[in-house]
Each structure stands twice: as structure tokens, then as C-alpha cells.
Amino acid sequence: MAVPPSPHQLIERLAQESRWRPGRVGEPFPEHPLQPDRWRIEDGRFALRTGTGYAFHYAAGEGVTVEQDRSADPAELELWLNGSVYAAVACLNGLYPIHASAVAHDGRVHAFTGPSGAGKSTLVAGLGRRGYPLFCDDTLLLDLSGPDTIMALPGHKRLKLTDHGLALTASPAQSQVGAGTGKSYAMPPAGICREPLPLASLTFLEQGSPSSVAPVTGAERFSRLEDDHYTQQLFLGARRPALAELFALRARIAGAVTMARLVRPFTAEGFAKSLDLAETLITHYHKEQAP
Amino acid sequence: MSRPLIKAADRFSETTIDGEVVVMSLDTGSFFSLTQTAATAWQLIDGTRDLAQLVDALGAHYGTAPADIEADIREFVAELVGAGLVAGG
Image 1: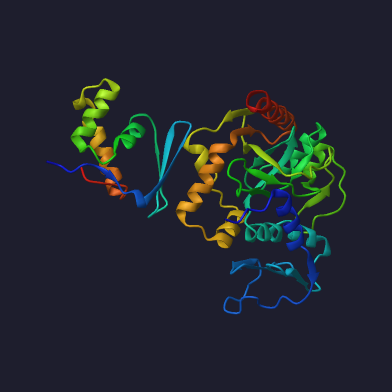
Image 2: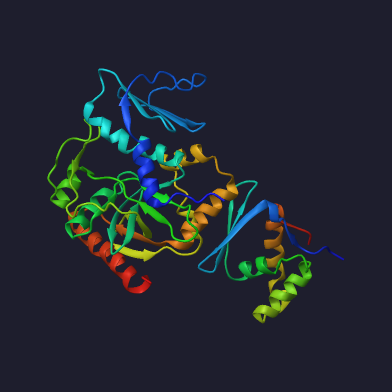
């Protein structure tokens, strides 16, 4: 029986497979011409045509080809390569993506998930101010090939923050993510984690008042993993798992990872409180559950 | 005499999380979250009991008169049968 690659080998493979070069993308799936803002994943290949002048194509062993027309904003390239393309390459190389940003603490990963605009990046930037290094921003990759521990692979080197997120976290803006995104790159205040680590907790961010945190238990742990974000769609397209396989994957995550719900208003006070609550979750985990 | 209730093993996946049994129909992808009596009933559906015997077993398990729970169990089993997860009854 083949031994699955180690998390370190997966990181190397992901870096190798994600390398990119400029070239002509054309129509990788001639029977299904790609319209702007559409992607297709099939037969171990991925293609994306953005509405902003970029086209990408990935095939296993060939890396990523990038085509851009004159209208394309050069600042957007990193966004696509570290977003949709990164997630697609990961899915086609056996990894499971979750729409989450995460920090590392004491040898484990603590992830925060929610729909776009839920404040994932801002929260991990704020946790960075409190000394927690960034593990990933927006896409968390899981290696489920091992029999026991669910390993997470480190991702991004910078955060993408809105002006509001920059202000809340007192983060200096480095450069624009892309003219149309309204976001800027910012360095993680506590640096980044480069090591694959076990995933310890997954916290669902919600807007509301008053600020509170509560465990997610029972079947809700399972149903909360039914995410309709594009990363899950990429995974489904890449793996085309049978319902039973998908159920088993989610059951494994639900059974192995501590889950909580963090509710807070989108105010400066709410943000400060959410950092307190998130930090409590992280430190509580280690007091109560660390082996 | 009614037939024993038996799970259609090839038509669902199940897992237990925090004591709740999550059952997914492989035909439709729909979920059932089973707690307390429903979870126990699901565990007792093992091909050896018909509906009346299941009600008796649950009554004994919870120290309840079978007549007090029969209607609820009958409805629950009908739901499982309707979803194709259980046959017999």
C-alpha cells in the first residue's frame, strides 16, 4: 500500500505545482468555453477566466499558466494566485480546503471561519497584535491522509485587510490587493508560521450583539461544515466524492476539531471584545485539551 | 406478524458526535439528527425486532409504558422507512 506523502512533502509539492509562468491559456476545455468570472475543474486540470483580464490554467506536473490582457491590474495577480488558483491546485493534489483564516499557538492551529466579510482576516490580524503568528489567510488547507491527526498546512505570508480592518488593528497598509477589492496587504504583526500543525479548533464568526462565545456541539458540528464557499465547490469538482466519502471526511473533521461560535457587533468595542473571547478560546483549549 | 425492522445499510452513512447520531441518506443527501429516544431507537433497529418489539425494548430502556411512546415511535419509524433508511415494521 502506498504511503501518503508527509505534510512537509505536501507543502513542497504544493509549492512546486503552484509555480507559474506567463503564457497563452486559450480555451483549455474547448467543449466548455470559459466565460469571464467562471472556472472549470476537470480531469486533473483547472482553468479560470476572471472578469478583470486574467486567465489561468493548471495541469498536474505543468504548473500554472497565466495570461493577462492589457486591462488586467498587475496588483491583482497575487490575489488570484494565492486565492482561487492556490485552492484549486491544493484540491487537485489531495488537500481539503476550508474558508478560514488561522493563527498558530503552542504547536496547534486555531482557525476562524465565516462568509466573506465576516472579519476573519481582521480577527487574525488583531490576534497577531497579541503575539499569535499568522498561519493562513482566507483559505486553510487540511491534510486528511493521515489516520489520526488532522494536519493543517501553512499558507499565506500577508493579510488582506479592508480600510476598516487596517484601522481596527492599527496595521500599516503595504500595497493594494487590487483596485477592485478595496483591500490592502498588511504584514502579520507576529510573523508567520511555516510548519504544518494539527488543527485544534474552528470558530464560526457571526455578527450580533452582545458579544458571546459558545461551543458548537452535536450534529451542528457536522452541518456547519457544509460550506458553499468556492473552495468547497473546487474540492467537489476536483475530487467528485461520493456522498459517503464526503460524509466520512466531514465526520472526521467534526469529530476531531473543537468548534465554537463567536458572536460580536462590528464595532471597535465589539472587535476588542472578540479578541478577548478568541484568545480565551485558544488558551482554554490548551488548558483543557492539550495532551 | 410484522417483519423485523432492518436498516438499509447501503443507503446511509452515520456518525456519532457528542452523543448525537447523524444519519445521511445516500440517496438524497438529507440528514437526520437523532438524539435521546430517537438515537436509542436507531441503535435498537438491528434486524431482530419488529415495531412492537422495538416499542417494548424502548419502554424497558426508559422505564416507560409502551403505550405512552408507541405513537411517537411509530411516526419515527415511518419517517425512516419513508426515507428508505429502514425496511420492515
